[in-house]
Length: 298
Image (tube, rainbow, N blue to C red; front, side, top):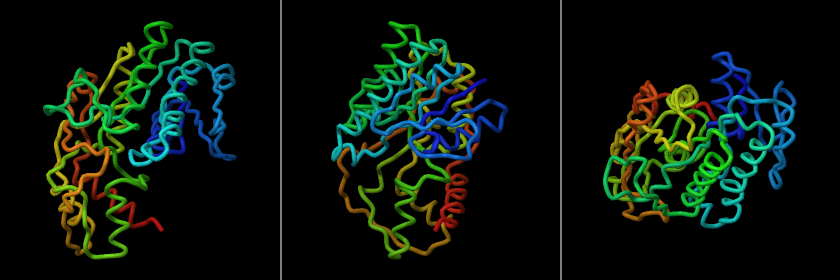
């Protein structure tokens, strides 16, 4: 297959580029950064992305959208920027596909942030969206754009609601922040109470999920949870992190909840499992691999 990865310089996008190449697909990258070495690469303007030329020049089987803003706190500070990158950009992509490559499967990376604080766990896809941040709301809007292009123009789309992704290459969020703070202090003060929970999924398992979706999903504006169906409390996660880091530190919780952060998450991933997904990397093994990588970073 010919696969185009939008946002190929980002965390998930860069892993996807290497992954799909390694299993024999012809893979093209696309991002705002200059790249003189990649054979198949499109550079786009960060402020005015135009994808017409890309889809006119190559007929792709799959377009994987890994681009966009990915910070809940920043979406409160720069909401229009978040909207432009997470909604407007998706519309521009799909419009180019509609005009030039209408049979191309479009995989949109959404987020579990669309759910906000769910009334029950696990969280199934039909559960009403109640985002707590502009970021979550914009991800929900993008899903509706995907639905529009499928229902009215026949473009095959699906949106993947990714839960708490982590792994080598991720230089932000929980584990990266913890490791950076440990360079300054042997005591960590963490947000919340420790009883907050997340459904963590390692980057290699996200690649497995992408394979399953591209191969087996119907692409009828599907909504698919990408998680492992396992609730891990933050107090448990920090203990595992401490054991695997080899750093002797203490920690406490501030009882302060950050604006936009949900309390408890656990995915109902039965749709993903029906597409033949199986978790490969346990949380403790994933943390071990992340710590090994992060210790090598300068």
